[in-house]
Length: 75
Image (tube, rainbow, N blue to C red; front, side):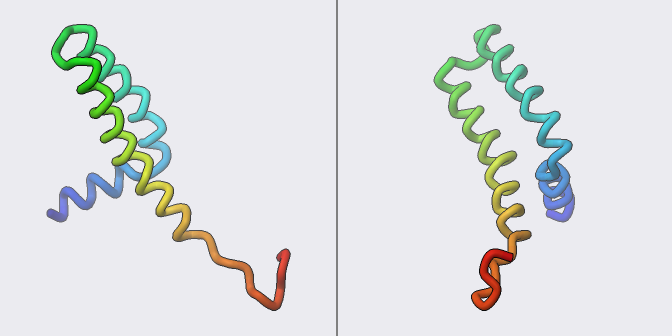
């Protein structure tokens, strides 16, 4: 389980996500072209990849944001 956490933590970092997204998109497109998966399955695979690579990153960014103090608006 520790290895899986390490892999997921590594995947969620921006430089790796930036490289992985186009590579995985090309792999899915090649699988469709070869007939290994249908175009409908490809949509599901792309959605799953987006969920794994995209949603955790957005949550990480939200965790870094601090709300403004009520007595100091605009700073």
